[in-house]
Length: 402
Image (cartoon, rainbow, N blue to C red; front, side, top):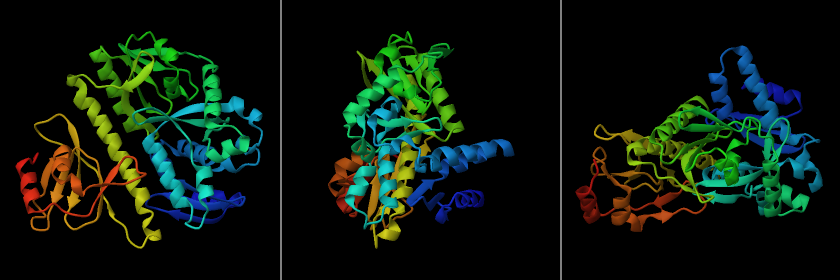
């Protein structure tokens, strides 16, 4: 991190502070207060092989992610919509991504800053299906910047109008290699423009793959995979490739499969034989999203005199089951933000080492009246500050899952 601080100071950054856990940096440049999370940079540097590869990763992150938005020649600073219209593109993201950005913004801005500042920095989006949403990006040779509401206001254009222009731009991009069959029953988009997942917004492009009943997955922000809903072997290959990609890369998008039915996307229910494989991908994704959310929520602690404990998500695989399951802990006497998991472990004061573990549905049925939904969080959490009484604990023990 010393190298990062030195580079920033060389270009005039002041007030630079670095946090180690979670890794992030705050600084002021050209009168703009900035902060950046460094988790991806740290992971990429560790995975890079050799000093030259690390230098490339470092420079790419510094120039493309941290510094590009503050240059005077950056197109999003233009007040002329006509000059940026052709560079707009739709980007596929998840609701968890958007919620993390909102928490990031809330942590970066002080309580004294106006609500208008927060609103202008919010990123508007269009729901697609399930957890997927689409936002606007502004393409530059170095990277793609999110389009915030303040930028749209400055350009004098609505989100919907700009989004329609972005879709037209996406349709007009070169086909390059188009669809490539990379294994029996498995196709991958090969437009080589980093907007492969955005093609989910163009059903006609998906059907051009030749797959009759398309099921799509977008594990990375530049990867789009398609298999047929009736091809068990192809679906298994797609799930296995998603798992491998998530292990090798840090900039994930989502492993939630979607099926295209009559030009409309809907969540895909995997065949029973493949359900554990697909469910594991989703459980890992949810766990990562909750972990990132927990870090951001805990960053508020210095600003708040007190607050509830932010519960964690753990993954477990039982010996008699192929499925990976998630669980969280409902502690006795602790005000807690409880994540939604497959299982809930009720840990009482009387028997702290003998937690009663039940399915989430049973927890809701027996103790759901103690759960208070927390507004504005995704993935969602329930606030619990009351432990089930004796009768309710007996009911929980009667339906324990483990």
